[in-house]
Length: 145
Length: 388
Picture 1 (cartoon, rainbow over the protein chains, first blue to last red):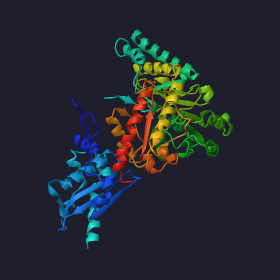
Picture 2: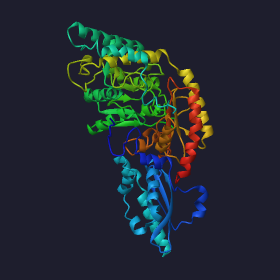
Picture 3: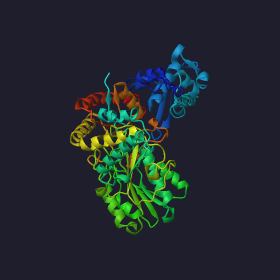
Picture 4: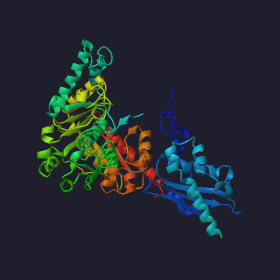
């Protein structure tokens, strides 16, 4: 019998399989070599190193100005912080991208659900990706005016 | 998969010899020490033998040893017990900023009850500043509680010197107060526990850090110390701790302490520790050691690494079969990074970025070489992802 104490606490590891997958094999993080080439349309950063989590998001928007077609991120933080930014990048870019309208509606809970749950304390402190994304969108809107 | 356990300050694996001594007391010798028949007598005698063993190591009287449900309970009993029994003498307590939560949280509770607590600062090396102790002592100080060795950074505190300061700079000679308590849970496997030399009135021990069982502790309480119990019941443990004795665990604690003190592994561990520290600081750029390099427990290594958060490193190390811990908030329930690392002057970031490795009896040099090989790659990967 496996004892499941709280959501996101799965089996022998502290997080879900999905978190594990994104934590050990993160997708779409900004490699040093591609930073200059990427030419982001918007950049956003949230968090502070004092609190233990800092997330930075780069987005690329299509010509219509309505759809995010690519993104990159970097995260300083714990396992769920890294996994939640990685999975957010996956959500944004799958199926050819996501409209800005839809992207602005992403909530921490959506990210957590996509990871098959996180321990409650982690949702509050480590899922900041949606805020970093929002800042990147704001940055894009400002600079495209 | 490797299985390299470097978290012996969290808890240790029980020794086979300890377990073997405990086992009969679960079944054939199951009696209650308070019973007036032969079955009870067997259990009672065994508890008294355990008490004698511990008293011998501490160089104290047998009835000065009180068995409890663990290190946390012993600390609670010492602090709350003194505070509540000696209120009329004063409501001031001195402790340090780097104590275990089992001490700090009790002090916070006492603040709510109207006590004033002085938290002594430590230097960058993680050693309590004794001149501050001298300054902090007041006429209404009833208790000083300073740990023997720190659980996070392993720094060894000057207990004998503190005891002397308390004797020389207070009204202790006339009134008995302030009492002096030390938490020796982390020290018990490596340091001298002779209370005559240490000069303490109370000393906390537990089983789980010395290859003994969890859920059992002891408190040395010097004869004549005025202490109020926390747990009332059938008058066990000289009335200071009600409840039927946890006989197997008490026997395990005594055996574990006896073995730990008789077979101190300090020379070997210090060599391993210093080798490991040197290798880590050599191989990981800008890594820093937390706490004094020499005045620390033989088995403690605590480092901080810029730009990489501790929990993430712990999880990556875990995936390689290496078990250690961190002072990062992410691994606690408090959302705050280690109070110990902040007290020695580390930034919040460097406190989040800490790793603690605590060596044990089974640790081999090849285990440490494996860590030294694995960690730089992990740091490199997490640094690449890091937004700092």
